Image 1 (cartoon, helix red, strand yellow):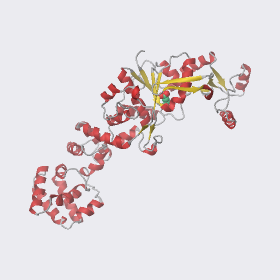
Image 2: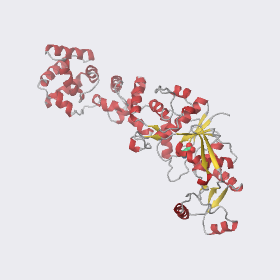
Image 3: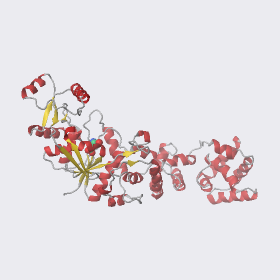
Amino acid sequence: MGKVRVRFAPSPTGYLHVGGARTVLFNWLFTRHAGGSLILRIEDTDVERSSETSADAIIDSMEWLGLDWDEGPIVGGDYGPYFQSQRLDIYRKYADKLVKSGRAYPCYCTSEELSEARKVAMSQGRPPGYSGRCRGLSPEERRSLEAEGRSPALRFKVNEGQTIVKDLTRNEVVFGNEYIGDFVILKSDGYPTYNFAVVVDDALMEITHVIRADEHLPNTPKQIMIYKALGFELPEFAHVSMILGKDKTKLSKRHGATSITQYRDLGYLPDALINYLALLGWAYDDEQQIFSREELIEKFTLDKVSKNPAVFDSDKLLWMNGHYIRETNDDTLIDYALDHLIKANLVSPRPTPEELIKVRAVVVILKERIRTISDIVTQGDFFFTEDIVYDKKAFDKFLTRDYVPEIFQVLKSRFEAVDSLDKEIAEKIIRGYAKESKRKAGEIIHPLRVALTGRSVSPGIFEIIEILGKDTCVKRIGLVLTEL
Ligand code: GLU
């Protein structure tokens, strides 16, 4: 075989969701492993449901995930156009070929007539596929139907027998042709149907491997018939299993975030998603969970793709994201964190040098504790705002203790007395005062933590004091004092 050529062929009718991302990832890994090409083709022939915005959103998500393509929108290529809506004359040409060879014929049935015929067939226990009503029309009959103002669709003539799909993930699947009625390849408005356009394009774009979701398996026999009727060479097929939610139903919005954009906005890292998505239906062995991109490319083969449904486990993804956050260098994390902090209005759109220093310090101290980048906002907001929301439980538990006003008075004045507060000085003041007042350090630290952060759980208090700085600490202690 020549060079491997695979494609990702999304219909631009929404965002790139987890399932689509897994499909493009498997294609990408397969072709990068083989030194082949990935073709991105936008299947926008459903005029009502397709939009440019969706195509852009899908492209954006692929770029964000770092899944690059060798031919398609933006990059171009020798097999274009890569938008199906720009290939209508090509489909027309191949449809005409099928008409000439007697494998396709015009069908004049209206949608009302078709749904009526379906109802009758079902009530008689026959398969609801097309009856073949227009198959044997004479030229005169056609002319008279056209004279009625009917414009025909083109239907593919399905021969008797069976069609075998050789699938790389599930061996042979046999389909009885009697269950596949003659199907439309070109609609009366001149647009091709999915099953037709996909074959013409995959053949002309010299796709060697069609790797896609297994919901398309029932379409594959139709496509194989068209390949054969047009004299095209068949590609290899690999249908990858469904993705289910934890409750074992098909993954959907009910299970939480499903689009890649949502994961980006929630603060997931592209590398974590790539690693996680790779494991949805593929495993190298039973052990290894963490794979770098390079390792995935090296190890990915289709024989390790499972035909069983994969279960999407958002807790595992969250765990994995935490792992990747800890592996990411500080500068990269700071860039991600800035995005989230700016969106949350906690840092100015053009951060000042002071803000940048603070963001760095906050990222370093939270890095071990967060699982998404947006946790920086939820766990670290108190570093950036004076509007601290005091957790009521924490307030009641630690700040209403009777000794608190007294220790806060002392701390406030001792903090005020130093030139600047770094973590060593803060520790010295607090531990010294604990000793002197015969209290456990915790009795001082817990209330102080609530006063400075608004909550009872946080990173180390001395580091927090250093990042907040003397003035802010003094101000916050003073504020709590006035409220007690
Ligand atoms: N446009 C189809 C889809 O998004 C492509 C299916 C295929 O890969 O053949 O489901």
